[in-house]
Image 1 (cartoon, helix red, strand yellow):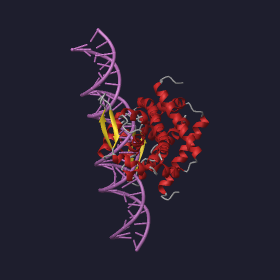
Image 2 (cartoon, protein in one colour; image 1 turned 30 degrees about the horizontal axis):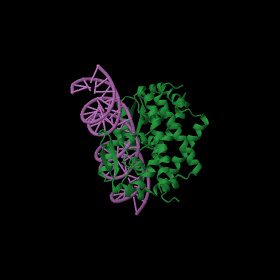
Image 3 (cartoon, chains in turn brown, yellow, red, purple; image 1 turned 90 degrees about the vertical axis):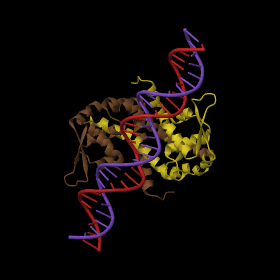
Image 4 (cartoon, chains in turn brown, cyan, yellow, green; image 1 turned 60 degrees about the vertical axis):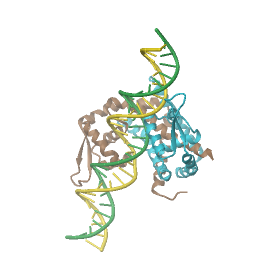
Length: 150
Length: 150
DNA sequence: CATCATTAAATTGTGCGCGATACAATATTG
DNA sequence: CAATATTGTATCGCGCACAATTTAATGATG
């Protein structure tokens, strides 16, 4: 029946379109800082936890090394971070903020607020939406790890 | 204050992560059909509206020609569609389903149902979430077109 | 009729996102 | 201690996503 394929479009596509719209909205705010949206996410983690291992960056952001390695190298070329091998386990690479990387934090302070205005959502609505999306992500990851689902 | 940058992480990142989790969930279902997720979206439109112009595909999916031109060419190489110049306006390219492209529709019928099971959401929850995301997308696009927002 | 602005595609370049693979370092097992 | 398995990065290739530029065709204007 045609309805299923049409409804499906409405469902998964809404998420897909919203993400692209949101990252587009970030772009003009991040461009003055010289950051892309995924780079901004990495910087958010670093501003919370300087010196984090690439492995843990991947766990926090659900990104693999194939994505993070070149991204972090671009941040390094931009002078925002430095890479450092762990002394005890040389497989592990830590990412340290440079002074410029730390300084950038102040210029990023206003971004969340500016975007919140554009969203035109009440804080409860926003919290609810965020919770639903987080639950959706968890469910999908669980289903992925666990093949047999109804 | 640190909280703003942390809260922002929770908000925008939830959307970003959910989208990647959802497209990952589609992949094993689409791989047997030889389709990627964006290609699947294009096929959904074509199954509804055969012969649609690439321009109108872009409007429906909010994707530009830089994305759609190579994507449609890959679908053409796969034998699912054919490209055709408009006779009245040769700038316009129409995309027609091939017999194989039309036949693929039947094999895609089960996909929405299979994914719905993995989501573990009630239909009202799902409809509500979809509605919120659609509204979010509309709001962000409007803010983009209309520079001055509080 | 010639010119010009507009529009639609195509092209080019950068940056993800991720599967697959390779490899080195560590941990585990017999 | 030696063989094996696991873990963390790095590399490669493909497919988006999109900005910027180019090309081509249309319609409008002088």
